[in-house]
Length: 196
Image (cartoon, rainbow, N blue to C red; front, side):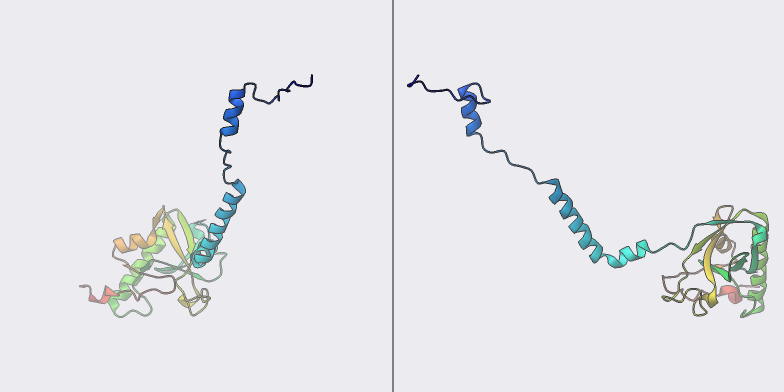
C-alpha cells in the first residue's frame, strides 16, 4: 500500500517507552579496572623509590631462626660469651655487659665476673636453651671481623624461655648495654664502686 507508513519495530514496544529511552542521557561508563590497577602500581613504584632505604632494610635477610641447644653443645667462655659446637668462632650475648675477669679494674670486679661465669654455666647445665642469632652492632661490612666484637658473632641466649641477659641484670650480675645499628655505648662498670 503506497500511503501506508510502516511502523518501525524496536525493542520498545510502546512509543512512550521509546521516547523515554531516547531522552535518557547516555549512561556514563566507570573507570576501567585496568587503569585503577595501573595507578595503584604506579603509586607503589613511587613509594618504593621514595622509601628504598627502609625497604632495603626490611628485605635484608634476617640473621637466623632460633636454634634449640643442649648443654653439651654450649661452652661458656665468660659470662657474656659462649661457643656452640659446630659453629665457627665465639658468640657475644647482646643487650648486657658483665664484670670482666681478665681486664678487671679491681678484685671485686674479677670476683663478680667469675660469679657471673659460674651462674651462666649453671644455667646452661640445667635449663632448656635456645640461641637466637642477631646482627651485631657493627660498622657496615665488619661483622665477623676483628673490627667488630673481636670477630665474635652475636646472639640472644634464652633459658626456659627467658633472656639470660635480662636475668643477669635482675640478679645484679650485669648492666644493660644500649646499642644502635652500628655501635654500642661503653657500658658502665660499677663493680669497683660497689661496697665490699
